[in-house]
Length: 212
Image (tube, rainbow, N blue to C red; front, side, top):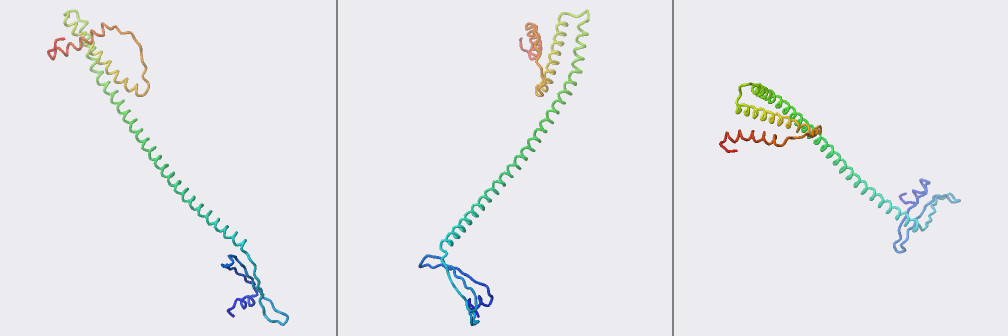
């Protein structure tokens, strides 16, 4: 009952199997078919065929499938690695963009703070400076001034005007940074310009005991 012939006849299902004949270097396939002879005896008919060519093609196909599966797996791993690197690069660029925007906001905030400081400083300096220039002009209009007093008032006026121009130039730095600065061409009387500079320097030199 444990024989293959009995199982074939009992189940009434044909069975087949393959084997490799090493000496002939060939593949074979055998089939068992159940039947009953004219006397009612249970028989099993067996026959075999050579399937070397088909088997070699099947083995080659299996090897090709295995190779293809290996290549697909390797390519999948490679693409997965590339995707991870791309994801990391995207995160790095986003982080760099965030840091750049933060740096830009910080710079803009510092620039606004500087502009506000310069504007407030100019206002605080201009107020007393305008008072000094105004009183110098009033004193200069007096009728009983000596030549020395008149020259001194001119120096005060010229020095104050120079300081006022420096304040304006400091404010112009903000305009230059913002791209709003416009150049204005004007004629300059060079001898008078040099005279005013000499008068301002003369006072500082005299205070320090330097002949000028």
